[in-house]
Length: 416
Image (cartoon, rainbow, N blue to C red):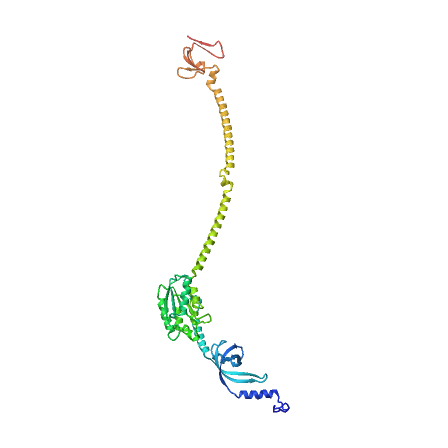
């Protein structure tokens, strides 16, 4: 089919030819440097990368393509970075899309400054200056607080006013310094050194109100950051507002979002502490009362037991058993004594029965000659011998007049 000129409906040309003509015309424009802001950046594991740029003053945006090497050469890029790019317009014929091919990409304006700050931040982070283990603990109630800020600044007023509202007795040692400009970092380092050497200062606050990136740039100075990291005294960074984040915030022992926030975080609230103390005392009192009540109940329970109510009560059964044992012992001893008494009496009766005295009571007598020998036979005496006769109730001295034998009544010895 012949291609028409496209000037009339009858001479209509093909869409592909029209797009091709536009592509040829566009690509004859050559390259051009543009300034824009990165609004979307997605790296891929592919040779071609896609980046969306938007005009800094309008809503015009475009997708550019580039190689991974171009992106790497630009340095650290994040969404929102302002860049200048060397672009060549291209038309993708299949979809009639206008794109731009980027041959070179550079961070520009604040973006360049942010890139430099990011590089410094990564360097200091690699050295360990941001590590949590290096952070010093803030004292609960510092004896003195060093304050580095601008003379008669709103930051100074905010810190002093809010800190004294929380703790009226707080003591400040104020050092004024330039808080922006070329001499700012040096002034702050000098004041920091003076306060760090003051033994009465337990805490240092570096405070400044908000400002532009250039205004806050001195608080990302490498020399100041290293000085803060080397300080013996804990340092609180209170630079700018919540979105502001100079490198000083990362190396300080505490970052406060604003000077007012710093004042609230370095001293306790006396009213709150009194309330906490009052609550603690109340809880302690309740705890002690509760413990005393428990112990009192336990003591009452112990006291109500029979053994404590009547200490002798537990001795009753033992006393009864002892009494019974004593009775049994007494009865046993009595029986034993009676038995022994009867035994003794029986033995005594036997002894008495066999004793000479018993024999004497039956009418017998004991004859004893003068030499004291008992007379057991008539042969032991002669007529005329003196013999003492012992009777049951006494004795008699006698003389033998006649001797007779028991087997013969007639056998007698007569006195010559």
